[in-house]
Image 1 (cartoon, rainbow, N blue to C red):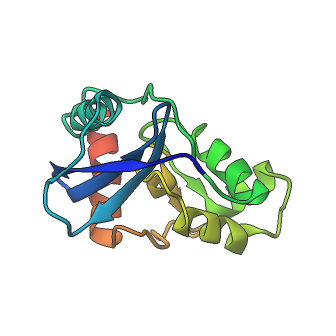
Image 2: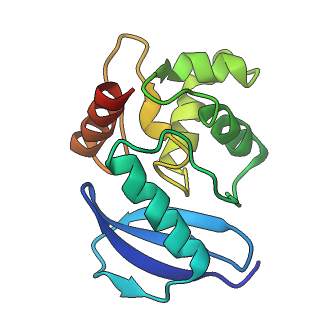
Image 3: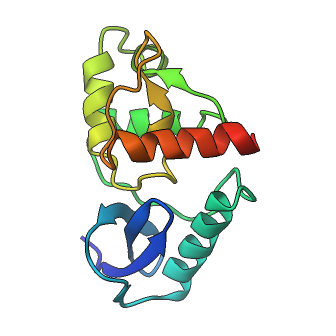
Amino acid sequence: MKNEDFAVYKFPCGNLKIGYTDTAICHVLFTDEKVGGKPSKLSENAAEQLREYFEGKRKVFDLPLDAQGTKFQKKAWAELLEIPYGETRSYKDIAERVGSPKGFRAVGGANHNNPITIIIPCHRVIAADGGLGGYGGGLETKTLLLELERKNG
């Protein structure tokens, strides 16, 4: 495992802890920790792109990512990156796209374990009936993100 450092930044959805190595972003996690940590050029770039996202100015992130997970999780996360800004897909849609048509619960598990929230947009995945499903940052935050994207899409 590569050495990872963290920095915490404040955003409209709360504080986000950005974890990084010398070469990539490894984590973007909701946290109750205070702003601070050990910022770097990479974490500052990620924070700036997230600020632009919350201002409605950025629809695609341009950052090196290193999300660690199982083979299935990585396939699911790669599929999430294909969901366009302002659009949603169902857990079932993602399961079908990764070749596991009945694996919608596994997709939910992959979303739950998404180490790079917002940038890997698990908030864009909803239930087949149109319900929100779940979200690690809470349903209020998921609603905020989806409404932000609808408004600026």
